[in-house]
Amino acid sequence: MGEVLTFKGSNFLRQRLILSCLSARSVRITEIRSMDIEPGLKEYEVNLIRLLDKLTNGTKIVVSETGTSLFFQPGILVGGVIEHDCCVHRGIGYYLEVLLSLGPFCKKPLQCVLRGVTNNKIDPSVDSVKAGGLPVLKKFILVDDGLELRIDKRGMPPAGGGQVIFKCPVRKLRPQQFNDAGKVKKIRGVSFALRVSPAMSNRIVEAAKGVLLKFLPDVYITTDHNKGASAGKSPGFGLSLVAETTNGVFYTADAVSNASGEEPSVPETIGEQGAFRLLEEIYRGGCVDSTFQNQAMLYMALGQKDISKFRTGPLSEYSVHFLRHVKDFLGLTYKLESYQDEEEDLKLGASKVNVTCIGIGYSNLGITVV
Image (cartoon, rainbow, N blue to C red; front, side, top):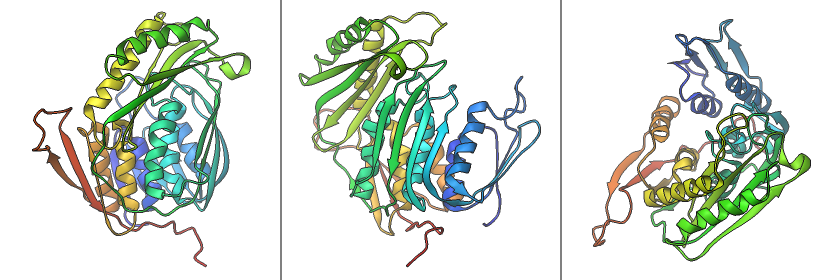
């Protein structure tokens, strides 16, 4: 197991627990919101730890009485069939990051039913994970048979009520190099309305297209008006957009209405917010959506012992801390280089970064070698 790694504070809890499971290194996290009025782990963090306990076998978890200290000793990644009710204070996308990171390395193919909030203001929507996160994993496993994310029901805060099914095969990761993102060729999206008038979806679409058609002619946004049980337990509406490039890179963006009980949202405002957020993501550029930079970095690190490289836009704060945690847990460092195309007459988009590393050839020790 090696020495116990010690951290302070509640920041980046997911990163630490994910890398703990993969590296088989125990972690102790202290002073978790120790100075807050309500100290200790939040409900959604405890819920996340329960999900990891279901994913693994032999995990030891010790939480102090005040919840301000956590000891996590990971077991073997097992996977299999799992059902989990996610905390409604965070979106299902918050939990899907963990499953995307650990799924390919489980002992058994992962088939997980998650229930909760599919779209909120904090986390990537399930639509964005499907459109932007899954393609990143597909590039590293090459054969994507068995990789699926299906939305059965949508759910908005505060009550949730959504349901998704995530399936992930057990695969070894291949080293990859992505240097050219290509040009954006089309924009697709879905506008949804839950327990409100269907006209809300149409108003969102018109507002979003009013912005996006000035950028690109190939824009197509569908409407999804759910009724009954498939509409979740709370009213709301929103928009999820994805731009695809000529080289198969996907940029995503979300915008949703305020939760029930808060100040009402205007559909036109939601449509414009989603469109401008997508344009900002396109401006950042690179071969990976900024939301899923850390996913690509993780797959590079765990791949075969060969060079992997990709070009991305400016690194997010979340990605910077992820690089530091990979060094702490796996002892692996990345080579980061600023990139500027000297042949470009005009500077197109934000500055780019070349990220390079050599994989460690990771394999799950729980899988019996025949």
